[in-house]
Image (cartoon, rainbow, N blue to C red; front, side, top):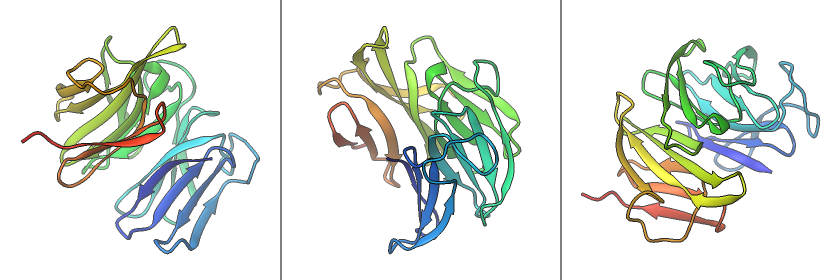
Length: 224
């Protein structure tokens, strides 16, 4: 079950597989370059994952894995896949997580974590030190986050009593963490109820979302 997908500066493709409990790195032709974890063996030690959700690659090739559905931690590895350190446990305090679902790095290589079931985004430096968090009573479960074009983009999912989906919002935050733009269920978007599970942004600031409620990808063009 491939879940998280990122492309690095050399066009290598990184994938987390929550069904196999593994992380893969492929060349752009599809050649396997690196594999971490043991197929179908879950664990919480440095050599195993438990349903890892996403991955983020630093400028020097080192990378972070959000380990994710089964565990509640962020792990950093060297460029060659050597375990370096980790932080986090299940909870709602600073540096604790309840499903760290997606991660992204800014230009300073701070790590933004979509702490899904805690309805917030936590921010850490490259050593795992807590910096700040983005939280608001109006947020649903924060499913995805990406830093692009000097802005932070995120999606949430609001579910009534964890049963009925009320829809997702897309957020654009400024550098201070204030909501610059918000649209979706709380705005004037007239589409069907959606559940945006992932987000990507291109250089022209077009936004792409994976809507798992309707089995589709949506693209939103920036309003000039």
